[in-house]
Image (cartoon, rainbow, N blue to C red; front, side, top):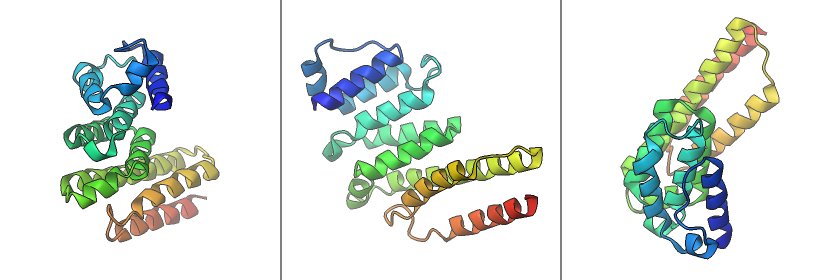
Length: 188
């Protein structure tokens, strides 16, 4: 717990936000989902995050799912909705990975939280849309991109998409990526 508390303190200080406790043991013992809700209320939807919007939302998500047995589902969905609205593909992909790795997806599935699973599914679709749009824009503009970096992002996205709790049938992604691949091949 102290390791996670230390991580929280480092992230909060890096973003210039106030820490609730200077004592690491006290910080590590607090109820993280409640603290996430407090930060959301004060900084989550405002522009006061000083350019750390994606980082702040990811920290809130980490706090939200830290006690996997007591996830604040309302805050969870608000964070995902805000990341989608802001169109932050890297942060959105990291949020999806966090949801899968923290076992929040499995918990949502076991609790029949279809709204939570749907917001994650929507996030993966948004990420795919943003990636395809970026690749097409770069191809049209004649901007070269590093295929290995794009491949790495796609591999990470596929690992989320193939989670059976989120996507029962990921065929729509295969079609979208095939079309994008054909366009890339046609453009050189």
